[in-house]
Image (cartoon, protein in one colour):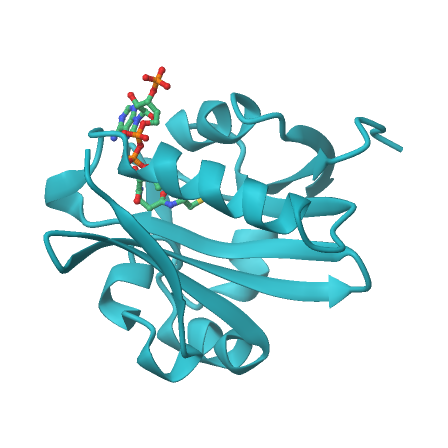
Length: 155
Ligand SMILES: CC(C)(COP(=O)(O)OP(=O)(O)OC[C@H]1O[C@@H](n2cnc3c(N)ncnc32)[C@H](O)[C@@H]1OP(=O)(O)O)[C@@H](O)C(=O)NCCC(=O)NCCS
């Protein structure tokens, strides 16, 4: 797999792609200006993107990560997430956080990379999105918050 991963200006973020991970364009546009946007390209075509926001010193949150539908399950998401984890390990990061639904393959995807469940945000998806969200036909209510701690500590 030949993949080029690089940071791009947030103003050039591929919104259509990011909508696969966060269906609210309004929300994406609210955190983009303060975030870093990374894209993965294959043969000069963007196949995946990830937006990371600094929460406070040393603490970062993956706000969205998405792979083009036609390219999913081909390893690009794993390659991009691994790159992001290494990139922040080499910076001042002590931890990276991410929020996801309480079920679905995404939960395993993050935990395979060392993320641990740290809390549950009850009714997050109801409170933060105007329309109901579904995964595998099941309504999403609660968000699981996961943390990758570079020190290995979970509290
Ligand atoms: C989540 C996502 C970024 C993973 O990227 P990807 O390139 O598809 O994932 P990879 O090919 O690297 O595979 C990672 C693992 O996820 C699994 N996986 C990926 N898509 C899957 C799917 N639709 N159904 C079941 N498993 C899936 C793979 O089988 C693989 O499992 P393995 O490690 O046991 O082999 C991508 O599927 C995506 O963009 N999904 C839609 C947006 C989204 O849900 N973003 C995350 C929001 S929390």
